[in-house]
Picture 1 (tube, helix red, strand yellow):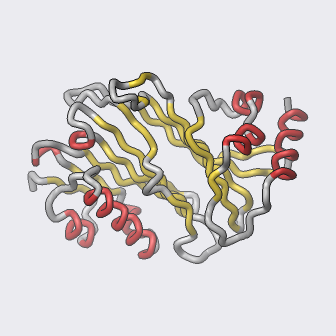
Picture 2: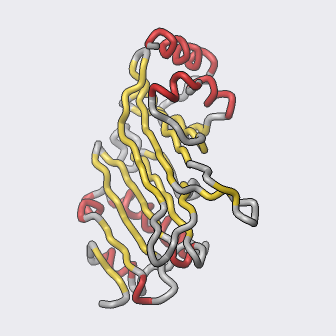
Length: 232
């Protein structure tokens, strides 16, 4: 198994263009994904859901791959694919194998909102070095839809900085009292440029009709609040 894995990884390096430090992350093509992650390697890495997207980026720590997978459980009446579960895996190429940096697992929640689907929001996902230390600071965003579409779904923003995971969790709501945002205290210790980028993404989500944040959320974050809603 190890020899097969080594061969596939070596072939992938030979058939892809080298990526230099500072260049934007590369979204792998279907052919590149098949070369990097053939079935035998997927089984080794426990990648069981269909692969939605793979990002490749290079920083001072090496070559990294972020694999986004979605379960694709059913087709809705409007032909959209509904996912009940998602999983992301971040890998670092290490000689002839991979080392896992981190992973994300989540699923729809059947409660009073009856979530219908969960998926990665790649419009807001990025891989940049925000503090100039030569290491990429990934931002991964995903969300859910429920009975009222985005209006009562959840949003989760995950930031990885210097080996630490920092999260912002938000619950949309048709009713004012249903909306609530929770921010990890560590968010306010992140580089200002990284905090600013996340806040800009949140504002864009609002403009795109995908997020309904509590009134005054910008002021709440300026004041470094870790939880805010419209009941306060």
